[in-house]
Amino acid sequence: MLTKILRVVKNFYFATGVGLLIWMLFFDANDIISQVRNSLKLGDLETDLVYYDEKIEEVEIQRQSILGNPRLQEKYARENYLMKKPNEDVYVLVNEKNEPIEK
Image 1 (tube, rainbow, N blue to C red):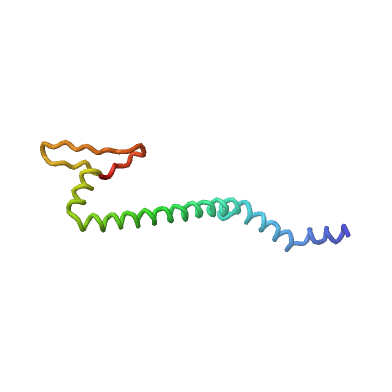
Image 2: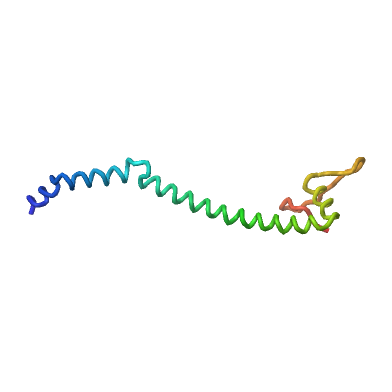
């Protein structure tokens, strides 16, 4: 039994295969550790993609509502960019979450 195992281990093709397997698992540029790291990073990026897609939809809805109404354009410019007319002060009231209070 031991002689059969030694004969298999001493086989050139078996030794080459094991060496290649060890090389591919630990030393290659695409080793197991890199693959796991890339997989985790891909999951994070897909989560970010969903978040940014939702934000883009919100901005598009806001954009459509603002572009159709000149009063909302002025209100948006005053609140977000603190634009004002000459000789005028602009005050933006915010709640605890630092969001503007709508009237």
